[in-house]
Length: 274
Ligand code: SAM
Image (cartoon, rainbow, N blue to C red; front, side, top):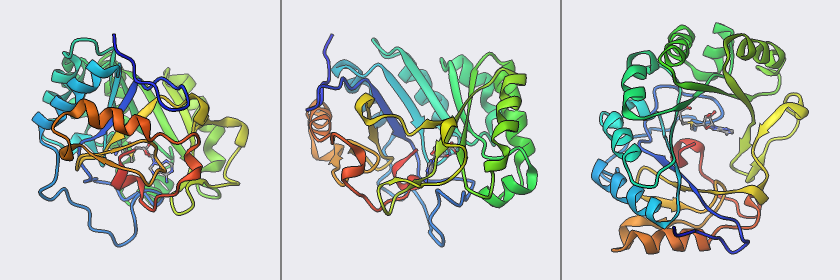
């Protein structure tokens, strides 16, 4: 079995693939104000995604997460998950979604081979949820989460803590997850203009993410084919510039910085894929 080792000795086993830039929410911390986001002609095709995923697994990747934008907006998402779960050597296929369409898709996702789903849920209060996401759809998301759990998917909820907006809900959120058997993680809001997490929001002792850079095992692929060594890195490797994807993957691993905050890229999460 091949291994991908970066210049700091970290083994890279995890690839996050953004399958679209489009999203049906407009979260204040994610979506740039006034932006028009579309996939245009440079969107990776299903074949390209499966080809890269297959090569990545052959190189030593064992876990692939589909994200976006909103991955459930992509028409071929079930086929992508089915085909990725069937790649020889893959150990885990995961999905991060805002949950709006999760109730519709949960059964098919489970059948496709998905075991776990992460759902973004930044408030349990309708007015705060709407303030953050600009959409009145908390009930759809809660219904989606419940349906996914009933279908046998392991559910983890992502809560981005925003000072003075939802930080007062942290304890309620922990109780909600305990009551319903969901895993959860509190995420520090990242400031992409400064290449680090924002300070001063919420109870610091409760944060799960960002993780320690010393333990980083990840690379990312944007929906238009750019491999990124780190969320914050200025470096990119365009998969379409390489005839042989193995070399593109090896190149991006060689570019991994020791610490994400040393290189600042001015891009929001919607462009990168969360
Ligand atoms: N649409 C899907 C969703 O809502 O989960 C997947 C994409 S979203 C960009 C993936 C994750 O990125 C979400 O959990 C979201 O909360 C997180 N995210 C986006 N912008 C962020 C920021 N500025 N700081 C921290 N997390 C962020």
